[in-house]
Length: 265
Image 1 (cartoon, rainbow, N blue to C red):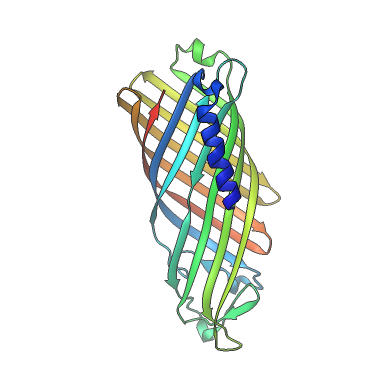
Image 2: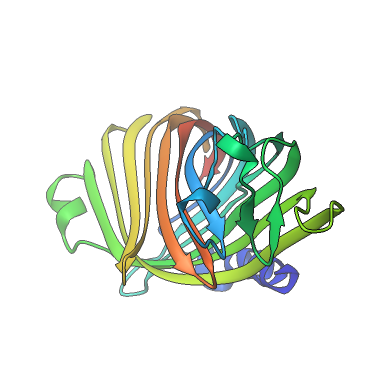
């Protein structure tokens, strides 16, 4: 995963410094903070429904605020536009699974005692690389007020689930975890409504569904440019994911408001 992060960072720098970028129709760089409210459940090698862990009730996760960043390069002529985004999504807490008759729960290859505190971590950091094209002549026909982009997005999810608790069979404190990189091809839709130069309403949607799995990522923002290339934005982001892969089952959602600052040339 470190190589992937370095590759993306190198890609950002290359795009920003490339000769083509200098003549691009637009370059946008921003950093923001997102208040992430988690919900849903997760399991690893579950045997029955009793092994499902509620993100709120069992893992005891609550809202977290994380920094994210993105780059967008609109290119001229027939070249595709580039979208890059990095979104940390990480939770850790001390939880407890309350059950009747002290029935333990299965996580991976171990059974963990119920009604006894344990610690856990859930990570779904993701990195996006996308290509898109603007709908032909739409921006020109609307005098620059409306623009719509359609394209493809490659999302790389750095997934990790970990639990440290008391093993029912041995009475010892053990740690069980699962880590995997999940690549996902997604469809991309973006739009911008810009009635005047200093304000715009924007939306982005990334989605994929296959074999009972799905991942939806929806973003809406209002952007204001108070002076020069500087802008500030506020909006809401919602992600919904259902994954059944590598013995991991996750059905979760993450949503909340965010704020951004950046520059746009």
